[in-house]
Length: 95
Image (cartoon, rainbow, N blue to C red):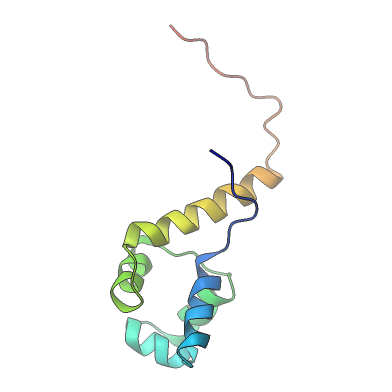
């Protein structure tokens, strides 16, 4: 199994979907029943796809909520691994 290099933030996919549908942030916010600033933060990758957002996105855009959360987790873990020094950590011995 290969590790994805720099996986996309869910906001990038949402932004692409909005462009394909010729939809602005205000219209998507209305469809999701959230504030336009919430959508703006998400599509600018400044906010996470929380479980609540994932459920809303699954209903409005499609894909299962766990897909949205999986994208967010892959993005977060990849970025953490780029910046976290774990060289001093060691696996616990197996009992």
